[in-house]
Amino acid sequence: MEMVINSTKTSADVYDNLAHYLFNELIKAHDSAGDFGFFSPWTWFTIFGWIMSCAALVLVIMLHLKVRPLFFMLMAQGSHAAPLGLTLPKLMAVTPVTQPSMDAMAEWIKHVSHVPSLLPVEILILLGIIFAIVFKVICMIYRARKRKQLEPI
Image (cartoon, rainbow, N blue to C red; front, side, top):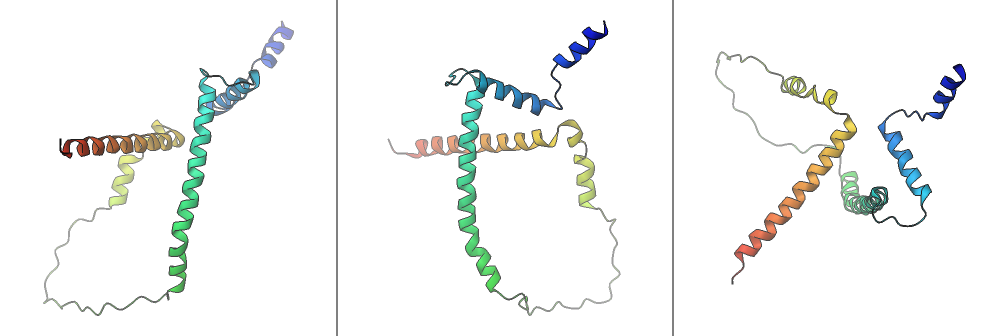
């Protein structure tokens, strides 16, 4: 009986988390067939990943080229702030009315602190990217339809 239990434990695959399992499944899918699997989702995930990584590389290079002149301009400027030359008028002796102070950041943290316990950070980032892409596509569709409606017949 002990031999059966030990052999069962060693034959089972154990993964730390879902990402390791998915990565191992991706590797198994690519090791099993050397050709292009048209209906394989892992092949399409890989292709989509390569396309997105190339696009990200191009965007990083474009950002670097656009930010570099700004960086040089900031380096060339002096670090002293220019005087505004404004003077505020002095008020007469008025008793200040104290308002109860409210810390906006503490209120925000109180309202948002439960979100990481619901979803992991990686999924929140992924959802943010997906919502940004969907929003951009909806804006493009809206502009195209609006342009089509404004065209003369």
